Length: 193
Image 1 (cartoon, rainbow, N blue to C red):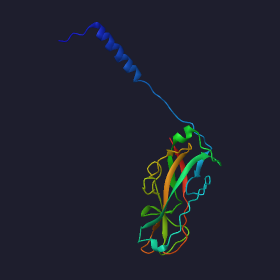
Image 2 (cartoon, rainbow, N blue to C red):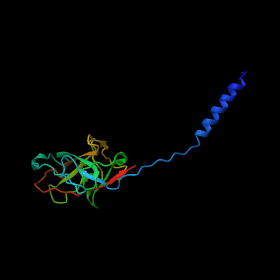
Image 3 (spheres, one colour):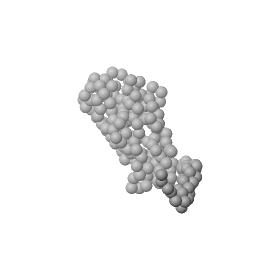
Image 4 (cartoon, rainbow, N blue to C red):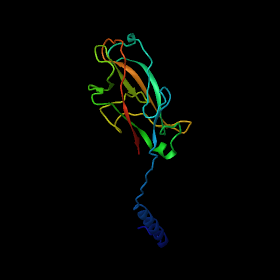
């Protein structure tokens, strides 16, 4: 039989009570963000606000090596800025940005290949479509939405901007590709926590 002194019991009782009391707390946190922030184009874009353009380099039709072959990959950056400004958003807004959700119009991706965006400027034999990749070279799928959709990580650059890096590339739809214009429209949604 063990004998515990009264002072030890008193200490155990005090510690046990304080731990029990501390476990009955609810902490509520949140974040207020600047609603005037939007995406603007960074490297390899037109630098515009909201309506960002990425122009892929011109490639010869002979650069495709069959169906699903890719070429012309271009890395581009998107930055969170004040609307119509080159000013970075505040720290709370930058830290709250978790990514962007990308979408295309109805029938804007190939049903059997949800990471392939349909070329809206040409439809026919030898079609070349488009594909978007995350910063880790994972194709973005358009049959899913945020947070399930593959997305690039948000990093803070040297200028205090929340920045996302993506890649765009051509992808062949057929065994043989032909000369054609290539275009697609994507929309984005800023996703915060």
